[in-house]
Length: 146
Image (cartoon, rainbow, N blue to C red; front, side):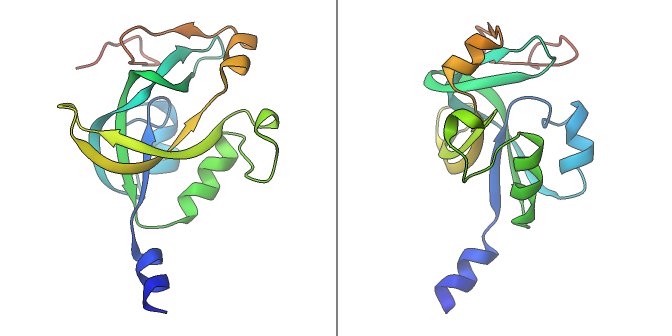
């Protein structure tokens, strides 16, 4: 019983690299009132800008820059799953994004532990005509990292 209690009291950690980052369009709606910690971070992956105005990442050996957001409530995953068109019981190819826990790093390359990330398959990114972002940073404002 104690183990279960601890599991539910843990923070929910999510690595965000697009519209859910602070200052981007979906941050205020989905995250601002619920986030309890925010850290600049990097994850192993490759970042693409999609013509629809938001990014996608694949799980590869490059670097994607974003933020590690921590939340107290597990409910945030259900809300973000809807936003990202992810349903855990569907086949991976039927989801727009898929969700997986991966290791996240600080800007010096030290591990921050594991967090959830929404990623897209290389096939889907190709179908959507994704444009690689060599520096691993995306902004709807056309801004470079600060």
